Image 1 (tube, rainbow over the protein chains, first blue to last red):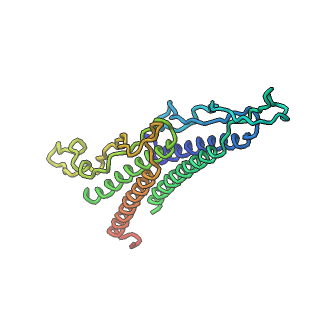
Image 2: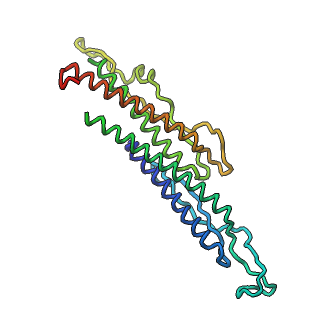
Image 3: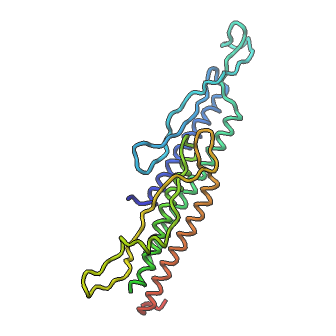
Length: 129
Length: 133
């Protein structure tokens, strides 16, 4: 059996890595909110299949297929015959909520990592006596 | 003599149990947003089972053998699915708040066992008269 402290720290780190990717994708969405034709990306997680510690990993980054925002702006170079421009389907509120959730889970993983480290240290302290 | 060592064995088993539970909790937290992940937990530390497990106890095969309780009997820690209190639409049953409580509980148990271990060690030191602490 592998060391439970190392397992705990490894799994917690994989959680932080996965949430970090999610935060990166959210910021990409926000940055591209005004890019015409941009579809917002969303991250899904999965359990790593081939390891005993069962780490988290990013499964796929998918396009959000919801309707694009259409704005009437005949002067825009990308406007169609009716004068509409297709902007992105990024919704700032959704991105904000997603970001909050990612941060919350990131912090929880961080405290799990911290605790594993503290228990490890406590065990080592026993050896020093 | 064996009685004295038993305290070490018990606290070591408690430490092992707490550290494994800690790993399970860390995994639950990391999977807080994984679709379909079921939260897991380990069975509570059972002192009675450890002391009473007949398979792990030594037997006297010669008249001169002293029969005592083996300090090495350590029950396997079993990981199973925790009862779900709330399930999100994607099938995930991890509640971060609940996991934080379990983590604090686990840490408390670990500290208790570690302190007991250290205390017993210093007790033995006192008994053999080294550095008088």
